[in-house]
Image 1 (tube, helix red, strand yellow):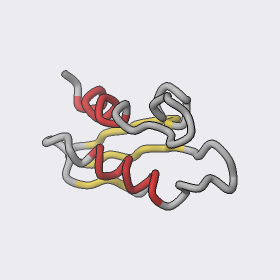
Image 2 (cartoon, helix red, strand yellow):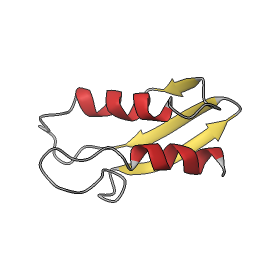
Image 3 (cartoon, helix red, strand yellow):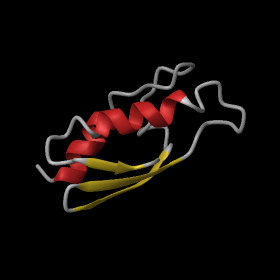
Image 4 (cartoon, one colour):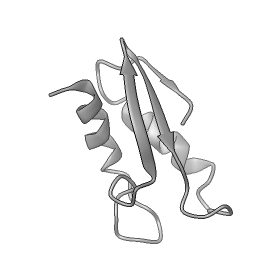
Length: 76
């Protein structure tokens, strides 16, 4: 499986706390780029005052780091 797809599979495990939908299916992840052992994930939040504005990007970063080929995540 391609590394980008592995990252997306990890992101699919993260759910919006107010909706029973994962953040990938919600469309909060705009882009996933992989270069060597580094990834850059472009994302957004559901609202400007999202209650998980600080924790959700950390969850995405931690999830992507679960992919063994990835060593560094540029902050989402």
